[in-house]
Length: 410
Ligand SMILES: [Zn+2]
Image (cartoon, rainbow, N blue to C red; front, side, top):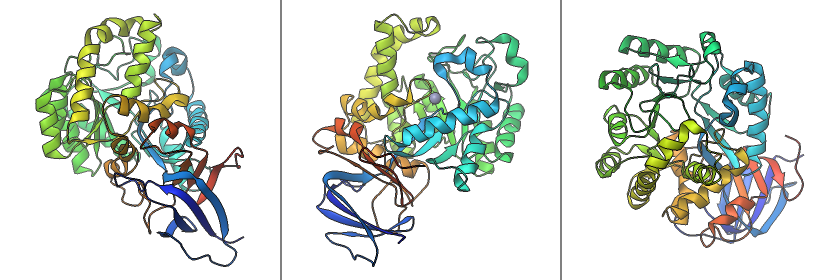
């Protein structure tokens, strides 16, 4: 079988621009885009795939998922073994790739072991088919902070599910442990959260020296830092420490936005999750530990989302799937547009900007020389962002994982 594939594309969103291009053709050799233009060479034996009624785009990138954390059933999930989490995560990752997400950044689980790193390694080695994974194995916070699970299931806490640390020295030790096991990212929490017990997203939980210790240890080891943050002061603390990405930014204020614009840090606003929480609040199904915090903060969360949409900051797509079903993660594009981003900016957030967050120049755009991570959808996503939820062609590294109604073996 030839290793060459030619895609005939009706329209093209290249991941970088503001408009659609096309018609166009893409030549794929092995795992790489070899050529792209109005017409490309047809090597002998090349497979030609007609996507002339589709808009073709780079494979989507979700920079905030939890494949190994079932936030809807935390107590049950804590009883699950590490192997069980890895298997469940593989299944979720493959299913999510069918929606077009060819690259994921996993931001941590509650487990004493390293299921995310094992799955990443197995996919990288070609032993398993799945999306590209970048992994922050565990979440590090102070005791009583957002990564401390003793409120959920105290009798299991001695098993090391929570990675807590309460001094710069302890924090450096946790960061070094993550690095030694092969972490791509360090994930830390410097404020509380909504779904956790006994903490508050409007409160900063790291002292300045503790946030600095986490960032400095990671920096020394060459690993970027992702910070779950809510409070306006928490956003600024993370930015002062040099965090590469800020997750949620629930309550970011104008000063925080200006700091992010100046530093080039990436904001990952997880807007679909706010819609999920809103729907649960309306249906009286939001967990009780979240109700008072979310009710109090919702107006300010929505103002902060508008601030991000109106800013020039780098906005990357991240969903927090795992805290809600992966089947609805693809709705993040629509949530971003509903919050005020243009469709083109939302698409860049889930392609080229997300790739920049990951420090990867070989994915996130349709250009010769980049990896052939390619999706296709009907219609025009710049006119109707909802068509992003209708992806029916998925290629990852030159290999087709979804095509029309036919799901090809992974
Ligand atoms: Zn998360």
